[in-house]
Image 1 (cartoon, rainbow, N blue to C red):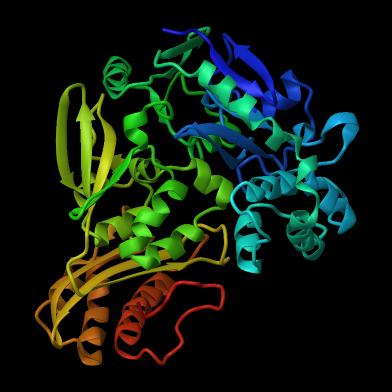
Image 2 (cartoon, rainbow, N blue to C red):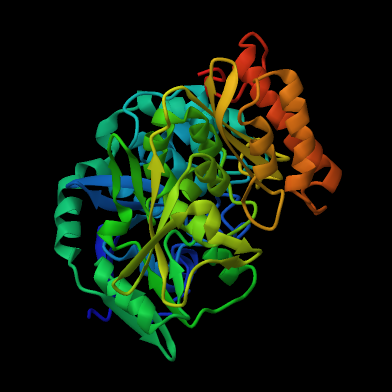
Length: 490
């Protein structure tokens, strides 16, 4: 085992031993490195003041990803490069094109949020070679909040930065050197770092991970830490043992076949989106509204499922799509329909020493119409009050198959079996749909909480079923918000 983590901070190699397993990247930068450009705002991955860029090797090339430093653990940097706002300027303080554009467009007011915006814009330049449109800018900056409401000049800077001389981008000029340095750091040894009685593991193979989880069934498994990070920063928990999944290549694998898609448990939302959207466009629209880009760059679908939250956005969509879950315990493997994984609030069908390995999402049968609707108080970066997902297949005017699932309506993500029974075999008419809407009260007994009342949840779930009917029978009716770029009637 390797008893240290190694990464690049800018262009300099860092080797850390005996660190706190829950030390965040934000605290490390500010307290250990004295790099205070990265700010603490919300400390929960919402405001973007802490945005940094993590760079990793993917198929021999550099991949730049904006992430939230406040909820990323420093151990997850192993084998990566970390860039902060301090690393962008070139020789003699010459500003990076992103910084220069912010200056020329007056994109900074009080300045507190500015480093985070700069890093999100820097990451954007690495994913598009030309000035983005308004929608792309909105997506890239949805996770950066400006309390001075200075968004218009920042958006102008997002376009102007492409007009500046790219030769002043010294990070781009060093990419060959960076690739070589990251290749030198790569290995397949398991990382094991201890501080007192607390331990951080980062295995590099699936078999090693399986053995570690067997040996430490009480360990907290971490992939993107977008959930576990909040346990630490908001609930002040200190897990004794952390096992990081991000170095296990098999868990980050996504494979597409004619039968469907196999998605490893450590595949991020960003990496999975294109494959999921190919057959089910509405999944892409929900994923676009799930957290922010830094959250989607780090957060994994496996983590969203494994924590069993009743308001997670992915489980209802995957259940409606007929997904299968693959679990592993040591050398044993088992498979079950995803809906059977969720037993009760906070309880899943997972034995001690067992972990989620992957999901299989089947290719939809010809003629299947898939819809997913997210209801939240804010359009962007908000937790769902209700999420409805529907897979409907007609034969003529008759419902041949229907899978209906909801989040936010019960203690777990759950299928609406009474609704499905009422629909299957019936004519796809408004009368049938309205009868099925009544059945929702048999399927669900929702609660009142800070996001919605019982009556609201039940009514909106019924209306989503009616919306499905309208979208599949009357293409002239507008049912989507302007910001929703999904083809409503695909």
